[in-house]
Amino acid sequence: MRFIAIEHVKTGMILGRKVIGNRGQLLLNYGAKIENFYIEKIKQLGYIGIYIEDDLSEGIEINEVIGEDLRNKSIDSIKAFCHKAEIGHGFLQKDIANIAFLVNEMLDKILSEKNIMVNMMDLKIFDDYTFSHSVNVGVLSMSLGAFMNLKRESLYQLGLASVMHDLGKVFIPKDILNKASKLNDFEYVIMKTHSEKGHEHLQNSFKFPLEITTAVLDHHERYDGTGYPNQKKGNEISKLGEIIAVTDVFDALTSDRPYRKAMVPSDATEYIMAGCNTQFSEQSVKAFLNKIAPYPLGTLVKLSNGLIGIVMENYSDCCLRPKIRIVQNGNERVTPYVMDLKNNFNYLKITILEAYNSFVE
Image (tube, rainbow, N blue to C red; front, side, top):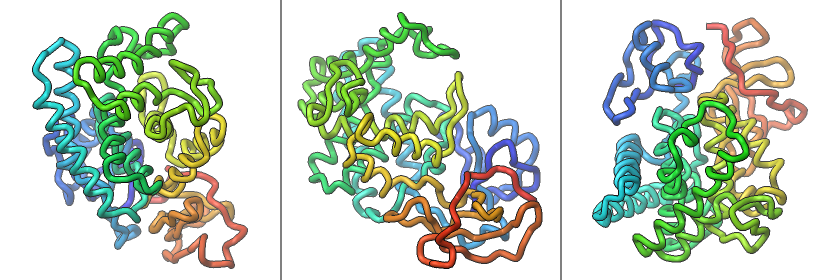
């Protein structure tokens, strides 16, 4: 199985993973043969790409951190909660209990597969950004927290805080929240109030524990004190808020937005690495590099020697040097063979230049 960007999807390709609609409905099952009509529909839904099965990627299996059903249920539950909170619905305890149950389910999955690196391409399949973003940040945050050996109760609090971290955005005017261009200074000041609004709502209306509400308040604080709303720095930032700060930025960067295209995970990873000890704590960045694959399984990469291949295995202790199935040299197809950039000393001088979209089909 391999990932292919939507602009390079062609008719006749065989789907390797289900295509889900923005209401959680099954649109295309795995094994379906792609037709032109499907490609247009997939583009309309906002998918950045799909997985396909072919001979070149045979045997490359991608383990999900959480399954599609659990992800769909979580998105639907957060969406329902936020919509009710927006209109001032007074009876939300049942919704909160449901979200808490789903967070525990996600946490069970993450703890049972602690050695899996998170494959972000798996998570980028929903058109409904606000709510899919919340689930993505939840999965990423709990994965980082598990690597950092947080206790179960802290991981649960981290999960709840991360899926609720953008609740305050439901109280931001829609013309600002959905603006397709850069916010002006006045609009940005209003947008920055969302972390305080979310914190206040969870604290005053639902009496969430301090650990959770503080994490929501702190998720835009930065290690060097340049964040908001309180310009906290270093150890003044809550541990849970510090983790969410990293995962929130990464998921936002790797998502298509009206005003910019998504970054590939490797470019977003470089941004996180560059922010170590300025935007983000060294401990959080270290956890991030051990859990989030900059070159997800099934993605195409171009090497410094001109070879092109498909990522077939990642290493948590050496995330920039995966095992690759070489399939192309320049513009020429080659008989596939394996290059292990981490463990084969013959390849020490070879590096990955970029995630690559162009391919000789």
